[in-house]
Image 1 (cartoon, rainbow, N blue to C red):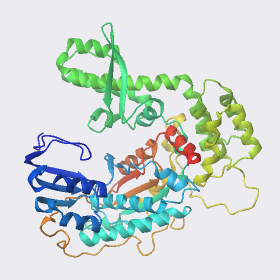
Image 2 (cartoon, helix red, strand yellow):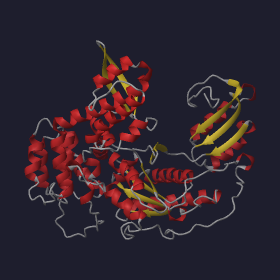
Image 3 (cartoon, one colour):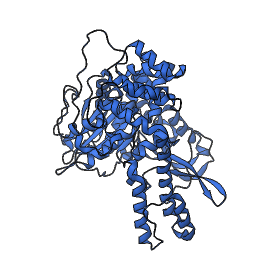
Image 4 (cartoon, one colour):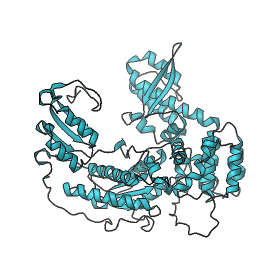
Length: 544
């Protein structure tokens, strides 16, 4: 409304004509969308709107663009721009291509048809992200998965096209150091399986949060009411708390509330505040309802997480961390992991998915097990028939599930960073592999054999040319001056889903740098995933 927009409508639905008003179209440059646009202005005597301002989310194919220019709509089109936003900016340093179906396309061995087209689409989306950020980065990829090199090559050709249209792309202080690193999901199968104990990752794993909306019931007098809150960056409290360990979240909320109460000269909140205390404060101070409701919601969210954790998740966490690390809390190597995992597999209170997470972590820790042992584990755990395929399907990500009896070459693994001094929580000893990769990349220590540069594009200075006027757009082409963040960026793209713990690593790596020109780390994927979503993706590889 503040921008003068009076109504927002879907182009594919029936709409009332508003011939006295100009319309802003935000469209994907697909055949269907462009035809619907042309239909709005097909008949000169019954135009849907007075004029059209058209914004495409990515490059419009030449044949479609030419057809558009020859149509009736060209006479009333005041603006045509490609705004390069064929991605979802999920958070400040996180993006998604909103393409969960890509998991099947890349990792299902039998699904070859359509893979090339899907890769072209992803490459275009990644290129629009780089163009939006003003980056023309050097490309790197994980060598152990052949499709990463193929995708990197496609992205490079798209970036070159953007650079030709906007020669200043990728220029600025230290911008020549920027990198785009393409990884496959098999580079770290452990992180998406673990129960994470930082607030955001834990909440999305344990609670039924859908489309970032958390719903909960609250008591108002004698009545129960359902409340919901959107967990996004418009909520400062959420941004403040999301990457903190659950052990300190409730304390932090209480501390912030105490500071707020003292500021507003409200009643003394004490050292430990409950949701009940907050509802009493709300009754006494209704003018601060919005702020107090926010504190109440996050306290409720934290309490909800802890309730689930104290059921049986706490027992799982210890075993999961031991399996992931290969050592116990004292750093001693664990000789008999089976003794720890069998009680969990036999426990009827533990869900099938949680048992599968334990089995997969065990298999990864052993670099594969025998078929006989796998059958025994599945039998002990009483995994339902429809879920059994999840375990062998992990092998389609390049993870060894069944022990190789031959003497094949084992792929060289990246050396993990020593982080003994960093951890304060016994149940959070594991660090996602991507954090090591990020830190190695920005300090120029990332092994070029494991993560090679695309041929001919190693990090180096970019060229400078004066901005050219696009012949294709003529008078419509007016990008305006765009301000971009100075300093180098590392953009990490994972094919097949990014976990919340890996998202957190982008912020930590950015914030933990000392001195000099700081790198900003941005991470994204085909989709954002929870551990349950990861297992469902693996299961669906059998349903193609």
